[in-house]
Amino acid sequence: MAAGFSLKDQLFNPQSVGQLAQEYRRALPSFDADSFKARVLAGFKDRELMARLDWIADCLEEHLSPDFVTMADQLEAAMPDPLDPALTDDDFGQFIHAVPGILAVRHGLEHHRVRATEVLYEATKRFSMEFYIRPFLNRWPEETLAVLVNWACDENYHVRRLVSEGTRPKLPWAKSVALTPDQTLPLLDRLHADPTRFVTRSVANHLNDLSKTKPDLVLHRLAEWQALGRQDAKELAWIQRHGLRTLIKSCNAGAMAALGYSADASLHAKLAIENRTVAIGDTLRFNATLKSKTRTPVLVDYRIIFARPDGRAGQKVFKLKQGVVDAGKPLSLSKSHKIKGDATTFTWYPGPHRLVVQVNGMDQAAAGFTVI
Image 1 (spheres, rainbow, N blue to C red):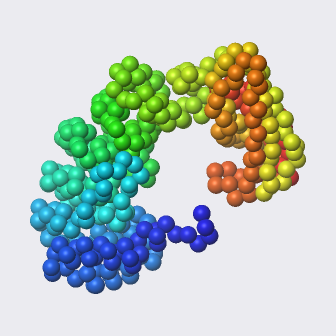
Image 2: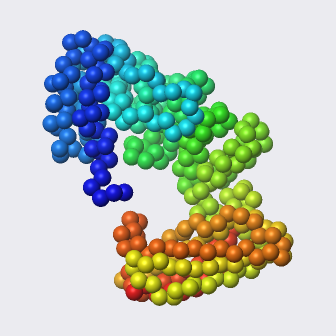
Image 3: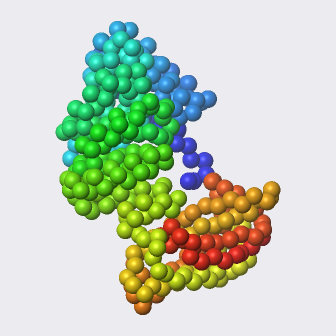
């Protein structure tokens, strides 16, 4: 990311706030777009990304009816055209259009549940309401789940995606939701065969969340979906790979087997590190060779066990190769790994480290190197 880049300023700025102001001016003739824009921008300086959204909602509700039923009509009247329903992926819309979700929760959660969820239904066609459906799931679980059952069959793929994304066990940035797999998996049963990748990616992410606490349940459900044959085989294989990625990273045997990788494969691996001494900021270069007497699908990772000043060992797994080792034909792999001084997930320290090559979840070869 470039130095000085600010996501909050990219998303919320004079242009985006001005656009929102004009949308409400067109819908509400008495709306003072200029004063709204000026007030919103003046309050941005000391607010971070999500706080800016709340601030925009604060400023907007001053111009709206205090009666939520009327406010809901105003919010819907100001919404721009829906996102293109002919697309199938990566059409997120603009963050600025999350504001109706905030107001629906604030003013509709307790006493206007039905009308508020109608606002979320329309708003999610412009920007995903995944954060804002969750308070309704916690406050009105049975009623909201009944709504989501219908939404799972909606003609608009953004609405269908919301069903999966809004019920995810570990949705990033979002508040937790008090649902059990028994409540959410029937929704995924409907959605796993969806024709759009935007939806199936959410299904896979939902499964990956669930796999962190219920791995066997996820594996069983994927096997059931495979037996049903409702989804295209290639797309279901993609859902499996993406939904099992955390289990694969932790070398879960069931996940490996589900993807066709045998932990008992008869393999021989050789590892060679080209530069056994490497400085922070430079690149570690290594080669690995895999041999097998039979044709063997392989998922190859490498794990770095790194030193810490207190003597404790840390480790991190990285992807290397997904492929096949043919009988009598060695598979040669090469990798250059940057020893980043500004790594975000861990810190490199001088000292002895170790590189381990994993094949189908099993350690096959290892060698040491020194960071200076």
